[in-house]
Length: 210
Image (cartoon, rainbow, N blue to C red; front, side, top):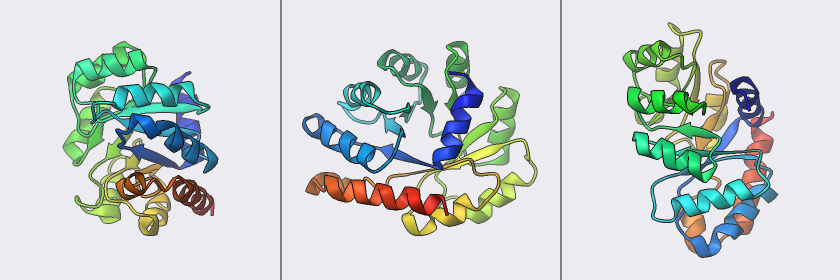
C-alpha cells in the first residue's frame, strides 16, 4: 500500500485506538469488541511481553490497517515489520528509526513535541507526525501554535486525549487523526467489559463524523 492511500484511510477514520494490552487469553475478545465498534485501523503498542503476539492476531483479523506503536529502536522496526505491521508510530524522533523504516518502505509517524523536531522530520521527508504527549505539552493551543509555521505538516495528537476533548482536536485543520485509549482503557480490560469497549468505539466514531 502506498503512503497516500494509507494516509487517506487514516484521515477517513479520524480516531486511531492506541492499544496497550497484554492478556493473550482475551485478545480475541478485544479484537472482536473493536471490530464490532466499527474500527478498521488500530495501533498496537510494543510495550508488553505479549504485544507482538497480539499484534499478529490483529493483523490476522479483519482490519484494514494495523500499526505498531512505541517503536523506539531500529530493532523495533524490524520486529514490527516481521509481525505484519503496516505502519509504525514512535513516541519521539529518532533519525535512525525513521531511516530504518524508510529503507524498509513502511510509513512511520514519529513523535514530536517541538518545532525543532518538526524540522528534523521535514529533513527526512516526513509530512505526518505524532504530537505527543498532547495534553501535557499544551494541548490544542500548543498544537495550533506549531501548525502555523508548518502548513505542510499534518499532526496525529496522542496522549491524554479523552472523549470529551476529541472534538476540539479534530476541529483543527492540521490534524489528520487523533490517537487515544479512552474507548479501550485499562479499566475496561480489568473488568472484561468488551461490550463497553464496542459501545464506546461506536460512540467515538459517530462523534468524529459530526
